[in-house]
Length: 209
Image (cartoon, rainbow, N blue to C red; front, side):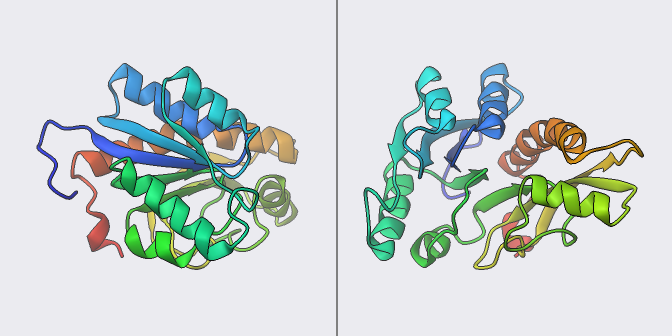
């Protein structure tokens, strides 16, 4: 990662749309020392997102960037990329961000943008596959195992190389809500742990792209 010294914390940016529970898991891991990273900025397309409040409580800079603040998509894309760069961000973590990133952000942070998906990719990924839609599809297919995937982000939904996964058993009595609860618990474990593996050099993102 660029020119950081060995003892420096990995500067990360988080982009979220709603509650930000994965953001909170990353904040907590940074605070308790299990993650050698520092969140430099949290960006949201939703000015009322709980994720922004979580960031403010942790004294992390925030930015609301959306079609409201930047009606032109290219301008919004540039604003997101510029905001990340101005805070010295080297790794971007999407945490429930419900929009596609634009080409400038993807280009400037190529192989440095992560997403977490509530299924074992490549199954149950792609456009429209988020939240309850994923868990309903898993149950409808009669799967016995679901899980969580951390992957690199590219131009297509959920298509980038998978970096880490964790399995979650599907119980006979599961509903989309009960399965979602257990999957989310694993998200909160796997995401910070995977970022730590990147920060420590255990995972080389360039070798995966």
